[in-house]
Picture 1 (cartoon, rainbow, N blue to C red):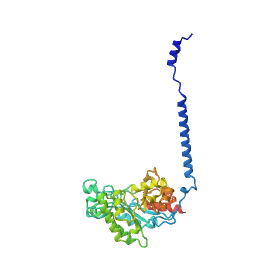
Picture 2: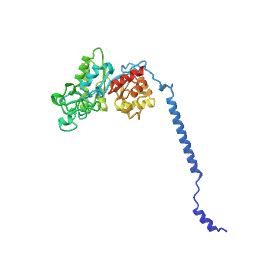
Picture 3: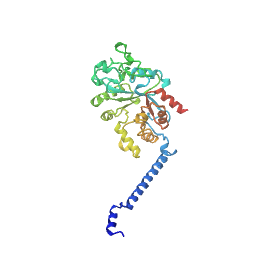
Picture 4: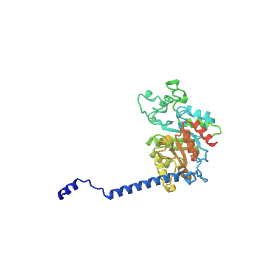
Length: 359
């Protein structure tokens, strides 16, 4: 016979029985996760189903922005004047695009500017010449900024030093008088004057990005505005900058000059589009979005090139222009989605991709 004491001892070592509450919680969690998964699938199917409004290109029939193009009549812009076919932002690149434009189909030149110590506006993507030229060797140190030296000093550099083509560096090692004039630093007004004088009946547009910072950025904006207005080109130029303070200076000082959205404005635009807000309530003053896509956008971790985004831009009379599109499949996708302009290092690739798409 089992005594009372023995029963108590067995009870002490017996595993604790799980309550019904734990099982119920797990069951509820499973139901919730299942519902979320089903909802996610439904959303994906719903938004990708052909025929829904955001799956169609919706043109703005009342658009007054000349940079908004007809469907598939997409602008091809030579990024950094065609960085994949000649040393970037050099007169050699500008000339090549101009002279061979029958195979490049370029409508717009895109390039970057910095202000020099003596107030000239030079064509240069970075703040320094280190990446593209022999500047480190010439100046004896790294990170000599364009704003630290004069135009005359800058023109002694070989701007083709680090240009690679098919695994080779065709202009490396050129020094002194051996450097061709079209591989030396060139100014904004020199480039524009050359293009305007040699383009015949073709009227190119320009996307010009100010790279200088702070007070130098303000000086660059003043100089650029002077160059553009002296040549009556305001209707063919969109200026840009990623520096918010410089962008605000440009917008406040030169409101008559078309500009692109700065990063802060792009983020605001993105949120307004996502949540269906009325962009007019934010009093935007930019005419274009200069935004990345494909590789430049981390392979679209955040996709800024959807039909919905482009339709939303067009609804508010804003052109959707994309950088840097060096892959034919991305060129075609943006064209299909109604984009207005793609900036590319390889304009011939883009031109052929678009022509193939049209067929």
